[in-house]
Length: 161
Image (cartoon, rainbow, N blue to C red; front, side, top):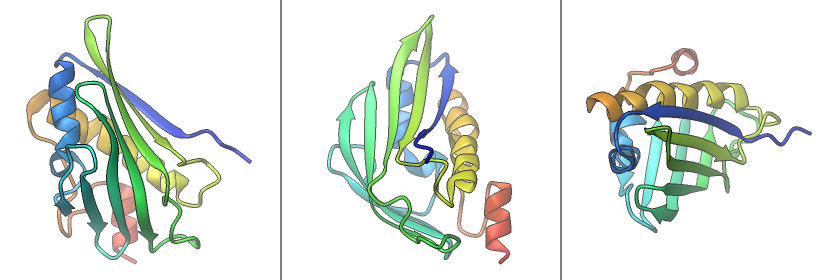
């Protein structure tokens, strides 16, 4: 049984506050299809991507310019046997200063290689953190998924099924 949580890290020249503000702008980097609030403690939002993935997320820890922890309260995947694989997992964003840069470490606690969705989710999170969120931080414009516009190869494959 593998229990290694998925994690990825980026470094940028922007300040911890700029990184924090970008992370809490979930519509700007993950999906334009977000309903609810995404920035303060106890905020809740719903994410959905077509009929493929839906989840309800609550912000359970928010330390400005340092840390944001989401709790996935409900989850549905169309493409897995266990439709609720992400339920009770904790996507976590940790912001720190390292060598004159700001480091963002994203860890999805509970997203482990034993999950059926692991490869697809790893690829999606890598894209959204390393590409879209980083672009939002560094240029002011991310690449979130929009209705009918999948961003990753796996999203494109799942959308065509």
